Amino acid sequence: MPEDRPPVTLRGFRPSDVPFISAIVADALLEHYDPGLYPSLSAEWPDGFLVASDPDEVPVGFLLGVSQVDREARVLMFAVDRHHREIGIGNLLMSTFLDRSRARGFRRATLEVRVSNATAIRFYARYQYSVVDLLKGYYSDGENGYQMARSLP
Image 1: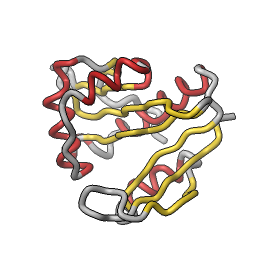
Image 2: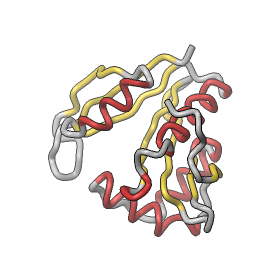
Image 3: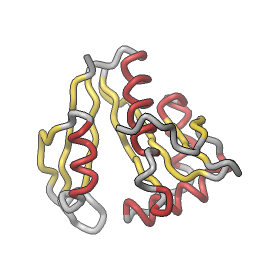
């Protein structure tokens, strides 16, 4: 993982981020969610919703983490704008999220990923996530997903 820090600021979610995050989600995750979802999920665990913003404060990546199971963090959504990939933003978001999850006392982290997203699966494997389940028809377009998990020692 790169030592150099990418040219972004890591901060918490702001309601003004919704249009930018929605665009990243539509492009990278191929999903569309109610814009009201982001502020409501942010309220549950504000430190779990990380936004990477450029020097103009425009979000270029984010990781939305939640905790729905005792002592378990879940990456609900995670994406970086296609024009800002391969410069370490994803690494910064994931490593910060795992650090915050450990600090909160979580023992496990989980996420879901499209079975066709080999790039993301390789990325998660570098962070010690492994496939624990096949989720049939998980995505809105009917594609299967993998549930991946890792312990948080």
